[in-house]
Image 1 (tube, helix red, strand yellow):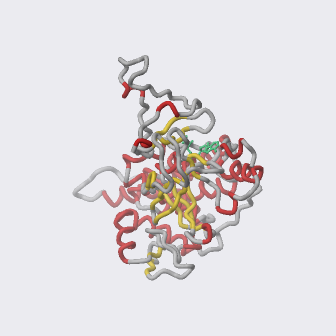
Image 2 (image 1 turned 135 degrees about the vertical axis):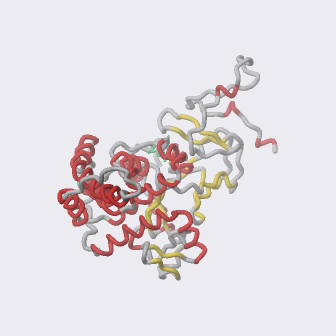
Image 3 (image 1 turned 60 degrees about the vertical axis):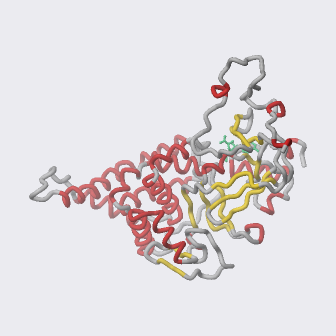
Length: 394
Ligand SMILES: C[S@@+](CC[C@H](N)C(=O)[O-])C[C@H]1O[C@@H](n2cnc3c(N)ncnc32)[C@H](O)[C@@H]1O
């Protein structure tokens, strides 16, 4: 077990945080005070720790020698996920099981998902709760009414909206959103006022409010964007104490791919205000939806098929604890999806002090030249790769 002994001295000089040895020149200092508090939701293990780096934000470093094939961490903290509509019949909404493109045994048309077993269906219903089932049913009803013709194709060559464009777009729907809220909440207040309760006067729901709601329902829908939002909103609603886990993730201040993508979000905001169950409406705000996009952008993992180097892209999801591993074009860890969980395994022997890294590239992309990998990482993740393989140019 000697190789598992902690070796502070082998930590790279690039680290911002200098760990003190108990026998250092500061023996009287409380060591606990030197250890930064782990960010909420970050991965915790005796095998590694998280430290700040000069160029790649926070990163995970081995605190012991780790033999090849060791399971270093498992992340089962899925917060929000999107199962693309085209895969909804073939991929289990609970465990992401896939049977080579065959339709799954159990389909739940009310909520628009399919499951590989009754166990998965029950677990899914239990996890989303009653409000979750109502929310997915409301979205599914809207999508079914509108058909598929509104699912727009996005021109990938359009420029990325800047922060001022983003603010303007959200401000542009604020007035309509306020009218829709009155239309929805007004109904609720009217229902609550009875002879016995005599709470408040019902809000004045006028034709203008109802028209704003109808107009929202008639605008083009983006089912996958709505699913993204619903999944994040439900998570926020059902686990309010865990919101910090998302907030501590590295944000992208320009998370929308192009103006069409941004508009799909602002329209989906209005759609959701118009159809989601009332208990969720307080969470349906531009702030929450923007935070979800900003954190998703640089932190989500693709949910892919487990065969053929993941050639089928089912959707994506955000597992906060898994988001602390940086990318390397020669990673020290392998990440393997096991159902709804990610397993991180040492891909080779790792020495104490080495960074624990994964690859953000798909199978084929890993074999590309340095220049092509750099372009993909910049376009998809917004960073210039500073990994060792790129430094030595191969
Ligand atoms: C999933 S997060 C990884 C954790 C992140 N470093 C943090 O502080 O939360 C992805 C972000 O980390 C940074 N990053 C990850 N790998 C990198 C690399 N090889 N070179 C430069 N930056 C990297 C980029 O800012 C990227 O958008």
